[in-house]
Image 1 (cartoon, rainbow, N blue to C red):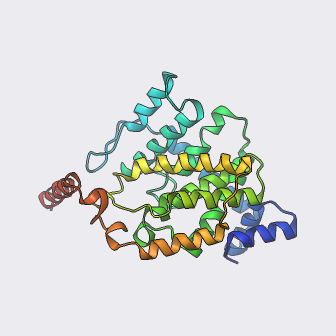
Image 2: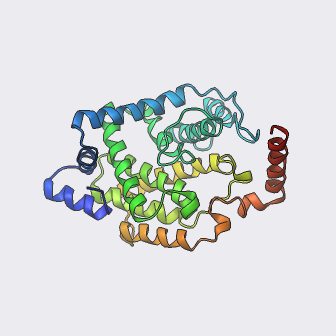
Image 3: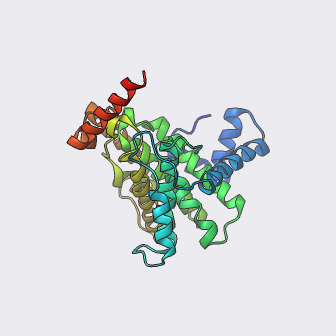
Length: 295
């Protein structure tokens, strides 16, 4: 049975006395007709793939256009000087988001969470926790189930595709997934998870998808950073007791409406926003020249 709303997950959690993550786990077991062990083994493989992608990043690769590459390493090295404005955990979140986004642009193996273009957000907030906090592997898996449930609901009620709903559907969804995962890791309630998701989506509502030359490079990679930072701030607000004045499912519905009414120029067509700037058009022309030369 598909997860149709955040309220449904909360209701099932309250009725059964089971935590948010376990409702999502049971839904996966039912939908795919697998055992608990098989489901959790699959989720473990997702976590291991995220860690492998981070560990294998060197900063030496460049994207097809040459616009992307090496900035994740620059951020890692900057953090090592211990004089960044953000410092500590946040500095590492930024570095991981850049590194993972670059890995996707440079055709490296990543985990789409929920999409390849937004692959840096969720691992960016989770991977540094191994460094700064004692977090067990099982806790990480629980958080990943929470993130998966959030992503499933948004996919059902709205969209996770930039071509359908703009970047709010990709980075926005990834950010909401990450915020919920962080709240769960810190022992937050199902209601706090929902407030984090609602505040998160509201913050990024209307974000357009305007990739230069139609490539998932600029501004996509750096938008993973803002998605991760938004996730951390919304998780902290929810854990502090801050609440969304609009229920989470209504916020997701509003996101869907905004996406459907968004002009086509701002839905992954590379016809508007940064893609339509003189620089954006010049990059597109250069890529077209290269394509013709290689055909």
